[in-house]
Each structure stands twice: as structure tokens, then as C-alpha cells.
Image 1: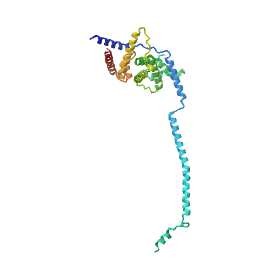
Image 2: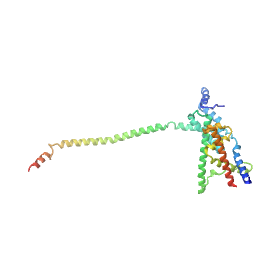
Image 3: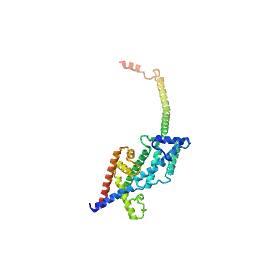
Image 4: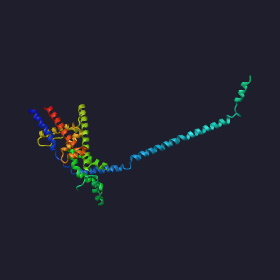
Length: 117
Length: 203
């Protein structure tokens, strides 16, 4: 074994020894206090946002959308019904003034005229 | 106050007398749980991250996670094993984050933007040369460990810490004792060859 290999092996041993020599840490005396404080503030934040339930909010949104689309339907439905009623009125006029008594063009008399030589 | 933490059932048994005394059982239970496991958790994290501050921050995160998800704890494992498993996974996550950050900072170095967070703290020992050499060795060791697969790294680092038997490591890794022994053996071999390669390249 040459010198460089010995040196390398010595370095490897020294490096690996770091893990064996690692000190055992004493936990900071305020560790638990800090942790409990952190959890307390986390809880407070949660309680502030406690009224917010995502599922409930989603259902609320769905309900609003439903009501909104229903309202849209009714709002568009009303003029359409007036159009429908005006259509009905037009039909009634057609029947009133389109009868054979008031017609200036009689199909049967026209047919008879065509039949004459 | 020493707390029996064998399982959640045992923990509940501990809570009941406290409730009878009118003490907020949840808070007291959690506080005792932290008191019992904080040292082991901090030291476990320290093994992975080599830095006291990071280890304590990670330990805080571990206990916050424990607090949040204690309801999800299944009694298949010991409560302590479950806590140490969280500690290991948080530490591994931290190392992954560091690796990403390192890649990003080397990219920043390439484009000429220095990250002040990367600068090494001033040595605090008596002999600056020794301290520097130790710092270099720590960096080399960290780099070599970084190259190991997570399960090898975990088994090896936990085996180096007092308080973990191979059975406990097996429970944490959810594997068998022979598998843990094999992981430790492979990790040692891998680590040694990585270090040898590094020092050979230097000389």
C-alpha cells in the first residue's frame, strides 16, 4: 500500500468518524413553549376561519347558480310568452279576416273561370 | 411526568384520569408527548441535516404534523415509531429541498448572482485550520450521503444514533430486520467507495 492510499484511507476513516462523534443535542429549553405557541396561533387562525366550510361554500355556490339560472329562465321566459300571445293574436286575426266571406280572392270561382272554354 | 406511549390505547388510558381531574386532556397529552420524544426527534433530524437550527425547525414541523394528524394514527405501529417515521420523512424532504436549492444556486453562480445564504459561517473552534478541515470533511460526508438511496441513508444514519435498535429501524422503514442489516451494509460499502473516489480524485 503506498502513501497516498494510506492517506486516502485515513481521510475516509476520519470522515466517517464524524458520524460517530456527532454530539447528542440537548433540546432548547424553549422548544416546547415555542411549539405550543405555534400550535396555539395555528388553532386561532383556524378558529377565525372556522366559519368557512369549503363543502358548504360549494353547495352555496351551486344553489346561487341554480337560483340565478332559474331567474334567467323566467326573465327570458316572460317576453317569450308575450311573443307567443302576440303570435296567437295574429292567428286569430288571420282567422277573422281570412274567412271566405271577406276574401277578395275565391279559389273555387277562379277554378270555375279556368274550366270555361 | 413520564408517559406511557406504547400505543394510542395506552395514551388514552393516560388521558382519562386527567379528564377526571378537569385538565384539558388534549393539550396535556400533547405536551407530555412532546416532552417525551422531543430529544429523540431533534437528534434524528440532526443526523440528517447536520445543523442544529434546521434540526429544531424540522422537529417543530414534525410535532405540528403529529398534532394535526394524531387522529389518523393507526395502532398497527407504536406511537413513537410513527413519530420517528414522520421525523425521517420530514428530514428527507428537507434534504431534497436543499438539493434543489443547491442546483438553483449553482445555476445562479453560473449566471453571476451570488446567494448570501450559501456563505459558510465563521469557524468557532481554537485552531482555524482544524475547524476548516472538519468543515470540509462534513461537506464531503454530506455529499457522499446525498448520493445514497433514501432507504440506505435512513437505515445507516439511524443505526448510528443511540436509541434505535435494528427492529425499530425496521419498523420505521416498514421492513424486516434482515433487510435493514442489508441496507446498512450496502450503505457503508457505498459510502466508503464514494469517499475513496473523492479523496483519490483530490490526491
